[in-house]
Length: 189
Image: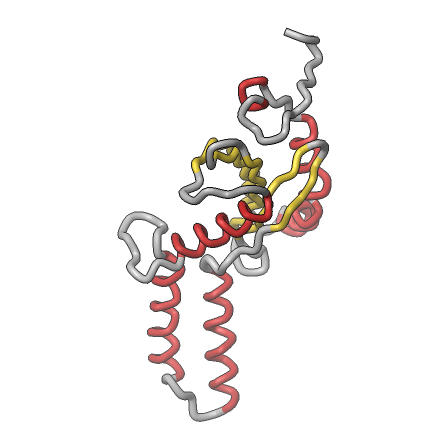
């Protein structure tokens, strides 16, 4: 299954370029999912909560300091798997697609989760950004191998083609730091 979301988002901190936006997004993500005080019925602090449960379980099964190297290895593998199943820190990269430069990050790892997403953020003025989220969900065993293979290359093919063919309206154009060329099949309006 594939879902695409487009959001206009205000960033809480100011940024003065794409590299600065990358740092702001990484910090905001880390502060949200790794909040030491999880908030019920939200994802805030979810990674912290997941890892607390993982450590509790690991301590019950193997103890805090396992007796054998085999038990130590099993405990570490369990904790590492849970770490990647939750919300580990992200790393943003600068990507130019067509005439636009985005801050891109990947959330999830298809080796550990059934949900995987790539997010492209286009910086606008006044701490706003236009966010394009491509969310993939692996369902059923029959299609997993084919879909997984396609998914691994979809950022270079499908997602880039979608982002390259988008028409950015003049309203958004007026809000970007660098003017975006207006392209339309209907001609000038």
